[in-house]
Image (cartoon, rainbow over all chains, first blue to last red; front, side, top):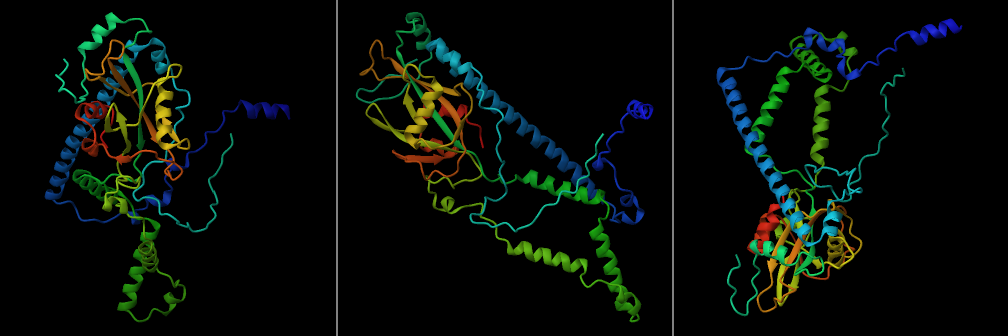
Length: 134
Length: 270
């Protein structure tokens, strides 16, 4: 008995399979492939040009964000410098870490505002995820 | 560089050179010629997403097209295709009794139509609210896709000005508690706001007009703090003064230019 237990313990534990990474075989059948008409050269040209415009747009957006953040930091540094000139103790109080700030949680914006008096439909959620143990 | 003041009028000026001379003149903490104020910039964060730009919409459409092209048929689509096939064969040939027996009544097309009907019956809340249409600047329901900040009308010297709520600093408290006190004086004790950190975000310095200026009372420094409004319901708040909730673009209508410049530096454009 003890020998069997020791053998089981020595064997390396099996890796838990990640369900999301394994494509079920039924989705790789050929009957599932879409049959769409081939892309015309105008369409592929349009796509390439659109992606280039997108690249430029995102670059400008990123630069603007970085500039805004830099301005924010500079404004704060200036405020702290002035505060230090005023009084050292206030400055130390300001520079101290705020323990209550993190973890900070907030629900993000949605597409439409919440409907007042909305009654969501009743239902029960049954969780069928497979739980593996080592 | 101090701008010349017209007699009898109070103009707020900002001087950078004065700081250096003040430093050498009064380095001791006791003789402080500047009065300190703590101001709170209370932000109501956006509740809906901003509208997409033209390029963003085009690229979103392109991404959807690409996803469709690279995908395979799903179960629902295969069922739909098979049923269309069966319908076609039924129309061409009339002898379909043996196939019709095992068929289900509900087809995939019917299901899709049912779902479409259900979606159309749901009416979402409008993105542009009534407060937007009437431009009611006192309500919090306006401009749900941008930040709104609180402005109050305060009496400084002998002038009534629109400012971010500010209160003078009392010795013995930190500047952050001054700012929180400012918020409490104008909105009552029961607001839930999350102050972002102990450090000030910006500063506005001004010298008093020459009439009031004394040796020990040269000017004032207003330190700005930022806070996020967490409760969306302010019915309990007793607002004692004139107040407004405005976006960053509308700040220019109410604030003076120097003050506005300093405030704009620490407000992100949203």
